[in-house]
Every structure is written in structure tokens, then in C-alpha cells.
Length: 220
Image (cartoon, rainbow, N blue to C red; front, side):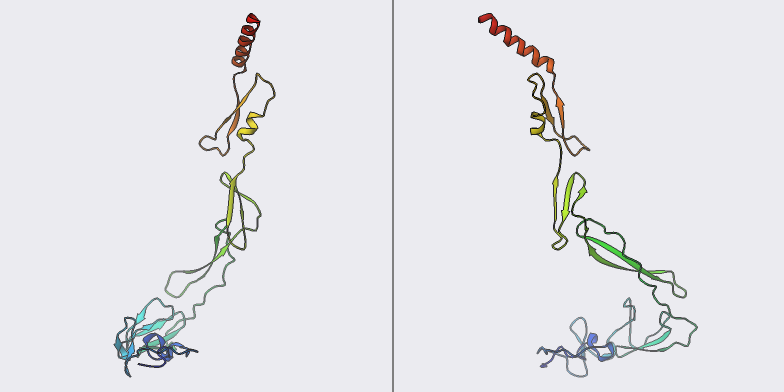
């Protein structure tokens, strides 16, 4: 038991050789008896059983294992969980990353992402790419998205959309004042956003009118 279980040196991940910063607030808890430390599986182990992560974080070395970091021109040795590196005696040159590219276009008008990249080509290796992403939204107050007209709140990231059509059923019904002409609203078909107004057969309506007119006159 320790009054400061989160202090440096109690686990493989918080060894002082790994640039561990002492906590500002201590947390009481269980620790391993010295000289043992806690590994990632909450097991107490000897220091020489701690793995050493490489500088790129892509692999781990076991105690006593050596490697040449061609990107940094360093010869490294894993010892008691610490990766000790010295300038390399091999013929190599540093392998720095290029400058970041500009961020690309936003993937969506609202709550999209932008991506930038950088690259490097190291000795004996193919080109490496590194990507960075950030969220983005449009500065447009209104934009079209399929059949809908949308707007995006740049602060909350909330998108509001609605279908905006010039043709509606009420417009069709009021399109003509001629009693013998009527326009009917036809809903949108596949591939269309808005419906249309279609004129009905006025001759049929004229015939019906005259039929009633003659019938009325006959009995009058």
C-alpha cells in the first residue's frame, strides 16, 4: 500500500526514463513491493521484464535486445524497461518528416472533416505518410443538399434542412380562374425533387357543363 500509488516508478509505463512527470495530487493505492513494478496486466514483475517501446511506438523490445533507429541515426539497447540510445556507428542519415500539407476541402457542408498529410522517405524503406484530421463546417448560410435546402450552425454544428419547391398543391389549384380549366398537382416521381401541375381535359368539363345547362333549360 502506498500513499502515492500514481507516483513515477511504480509501473513499467511510468519509469523515470520515460519522461514521467510526478503527479500534482497523490492517489493512495496498492503498489508492488520494491524492486518489483506493475506491468500492463496488473502483475508484479522484475524491471528486466518490462518491454521497451521504440521511438515510433510501433514495436517493443525485450530486455537486452538491440536495434538501430535509422530515422534518428541511433543505436539503442533495451535495459530494465528503458531504451538507452547513443549516436549510431552505422552509415545512416536522419529521416525527418516533411512540412504538413495544407488542409484539404471539407468532407461535408456540416460536421465534416479536413485532412492534411506529411511524408518521409527513410533509407531502405518505402515512403511513409502521416495524416492529421480536424472537424470543419461550411461558412455558407444556405446550401443545397439533394432535394433539400440546408443551413449549418457553425457554433453548434446542427444542420437544418427542408424541401423547398415552387410547385405545391395549393398553387396548382389556384393556377387558373377559368371554370373550364383546372390544374391538378402530380407528386414528384423517381429522380425528381418536386411535383408538377398538370392541366386536365377541359373538353370533358365543358361537356358536363353544357349537359347540365341544357337539362336546366329543358325543365325551366
